[in-house]
Image (cartoon, rainbow, N blue to C red; front, side, top):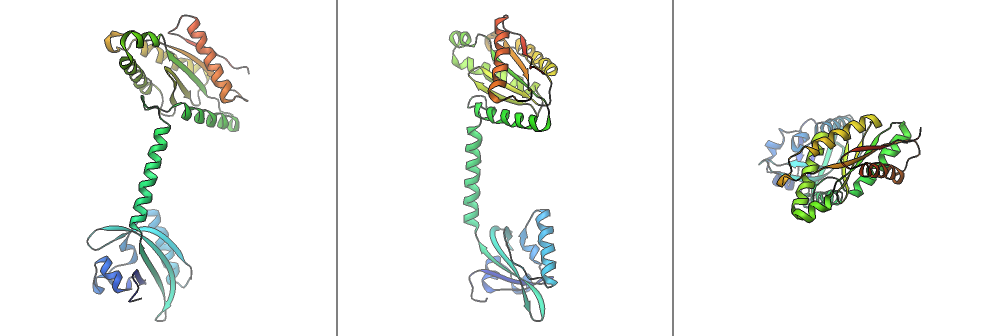
Length: 287
């Protein structure tokens, strides 16, 4: 063990041996390391620490088993690196003894963590609308399918609110797309402030939006839509533009699919447009 270029240690209640390579890597003298336990050299969460402590006790009581961890290892100077730790049991000088072999895998773990973060960022970006930063159509389709599955399994109803901006093309044509984008962003901000944390709000496309009101029956969803409609109608938009929205509301029922839920909400929205815009209309499911 004295010549192996890895950190090798033997321990009981305290560390009883670390090879020269390990002492040099960790920055301790033999006397200093002998004052520490294995847990003093690693950085763990509370649940990991309890698990490792229990396994350490098992080894010192004579149980023979192997394990491998990837944990943060602490040096004397406070620096930390990721180590792949192989742990086993040995019978040394007439006593059961824990054995650890630590390999520095810091570069590998850092690169893997960076790659995972990048993947998560790209995945999140792919699920968000570029302008408004709320979930996009892809995210909405997935969420709606999940809600329908849960509704089928647990018999819990929810409502779908579809709305769009009245005469949005006229706003773009009159004031320009930059003002149109501002109107979209301000409407999104208004909606987010007036729905529950558990409700799912997404941009469906163009000036159309969807709200999945979880655990909400039709009557309450209509109340929510009316509240949102009013807040938009009285909001002070740039250049004193008069902006209104029309809303279509429907409730889930057994056997619904993504397609017919969207169809029902769209038909209700069409009814609101047909009746003069800036209003809420429903598509009541058959029971």
